[in-house]
Figure (cartoon, helix red, strand yellow):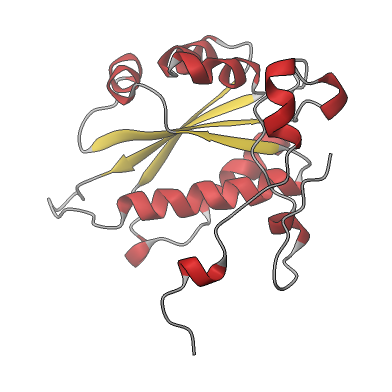
Length: 190
């Protein structure tokens, strides 16, 4: 299913066709090389001063670790988390080894997840970022201690085709994609 973005100027297909589904094919599995490619894309994302204040916990569906990550998702997000082929917990390092606050840690993690997302689309996969999860529970269950903080849960998999979507997801997963116009987002442009 194509949900290509309508833009003022053409974008690369990997960007223009990216979208976040609400339903994943529950029987789809990722190969080792696909998981590695996704994590390499995240690893090689830009990082302020090359500090790389981001870490990842990755788990395939069907594993105990995947079940643990699903258990941290808020109820409304468990549907796609459970069916995702891969869950990735993005963790930020808020303070560097020298005790200095890492002001760009969340930004760097966002860059890494964005790169993972583009790589996923290149592989014919989709990504849904999940902010609605219990970060404290994730930290407790996975023994994540300061200065590290769980920040985002990311679901990766193959989107359910439109003709097989659950009724509650049809309208949103087939509707035209929208964004604010550039004129609302860009303050000054010369």
